[in-house]
Length: 253
Image (cartoon, rainbow, N blue to C red):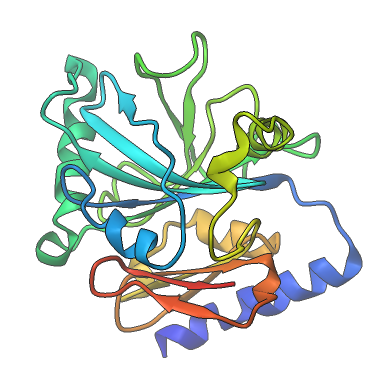
């Protein structure tokens, strides 16, 4: 019954895509919270993906991350890092990431999707949002959270703080032969073209998920577990990598 409650989202998304309506947001990247040091990266490397060599520190938030970069976005593995400081204002957020890291035991969602603004982005959304600022962000910027504070176990939906989107940054880097190695995955995958998220129950999705699905950006459905289903290059090679149990992730490319 829960899955049927979400089924209309996909139908609306399909009709919008056919109509060619420009969405008010653009997919920027997606993330999974993992254990400290991100040893789970090994399953991605074994599948022919390059993990970027840069370690990203989120000062003030108490987390760090590594990424798998694509020409128009990336998949990020975030983890609690005891060597990264936590600001007093973000103590609750740091604790939330710790609980997400142990998602199998805590029931917190390990998944997040981040969007970038477009010229069609409205000034206000048909749901409540709230803002987070931290030392690691660009001065004067913030993350606009679409997942309510009151539902900490639900998956995270947010809008990027960066003034330049991941797509714009990565397309520029890809043109630089001295810096484009991170996009040259041995398995040939290049672009992020689709996302589907499965949650154990519909309560795992914040109210904003309905809006995101209606724009044709992501498909959400209730199932038996947390699962991020990623499609690269429109599944051009017809290959699938199942990263479970290391990661709640399946990739088609």
